[in-house]
Amino acid sequence: MQTQHDLLLRLPAVPELDSLMQPSRDSLLRLPAVLALVPVSRATWYAGVKSGRYPQPVSLGPRCVAWRASDIQQLVSQGA
Image (cartoon, rainbow, N blue to C red; front, top):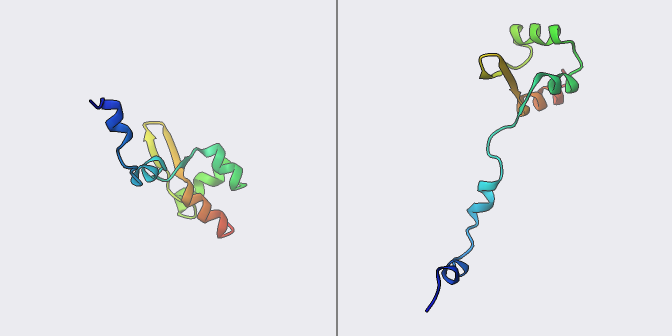
């Protein structure tokens, strides 16, 4: 008689499991990390966000924002 453990060992591998383990969402950077990549002051950064020169943040809570890493990477590669 086969046990439940034996049956589980015979299940085929699921290739989609690897893709589920990879983060599918863009990572987020808080302001100190952004300013380490884009060498401007905090005031200049927020003025640039307001004017549209820099990307808009994502709200994480009432007093907490972050920026998409892909947006910052694109900004840095464009030579901002």
